[in-house]
Image 1 (cartoon, rainbow, N blue to C red):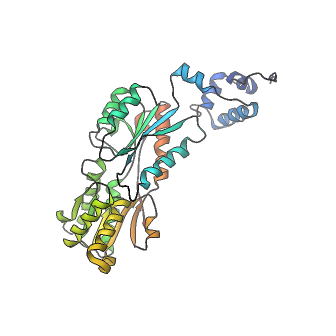
Image 2: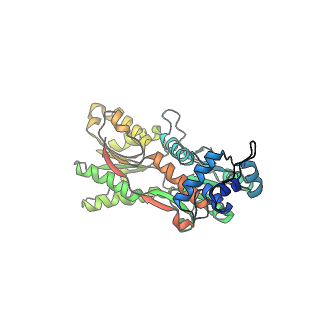
Image 3: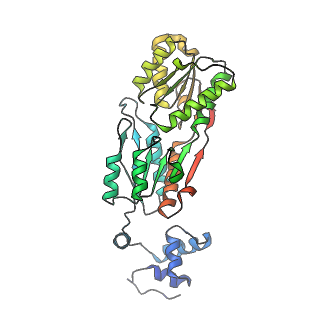
Length: 337
């Protein structure tokens, strides 16, 4: 070990000389440890801290073209009265995963009624990010097609018909809807309404399949009049619920918190005190039911954890991992709130 003269900048070579290893080993360890043992990563980082190493990001950006920026295009509901805890939870998880790294997050909110394709194109052509996170995918998502052609690392929250070619994280939506519908059937409800998003989204067809599976397992017929697809805001959910209880619905399987809150309000407006007898199932990343005094079967998966996984998969893609190694589907946990 050779002591550095006062004021001498600490470089990767300084760390390499300190530990008696190659500069390549130090570089790999500081970038996350690809093909390096955990013990070596620990030693390199300890030495870097001890010596006061600070990476010159401006030099790295000039040399490599990296931006150290992750861009997120997350769909926020246009509902101004209740808001959208889902996308906020995802962002929280993304920030947590990137904490302590050199990456920062930029978020471009997109309403569920619009496409973010043009914004995605601007990021790619302007080289404004090293990777992109998208949600609310469609089967033939034009953003996914563009990013595959452009060669930009990205990950989607949701699958597409092109999923074998790109990174994604998704909930098992078939199972979640099956789980929620089965929970309502087991509680004695029979005319269960499915209150879900627009059919253009890939996850919606999966949820319909799960809903039908639960009815088939119970040897009961599905009533098409009890399946509704709406824009994701509480107002539309409320009106749909009024129509559904008039059709005889005795329970609701809701796609998210907004659909549940709207359905609950609409049912109470139409039925008054009798609405308390209705059953509710929700796919959610929160424990909302615990604060509302309503019995809810909650198909739960933490949105913060979903955001963490999305960011983790994107980091792997940016580091060069194949898309096939960056694909994950997770099942929800049933909770009675």
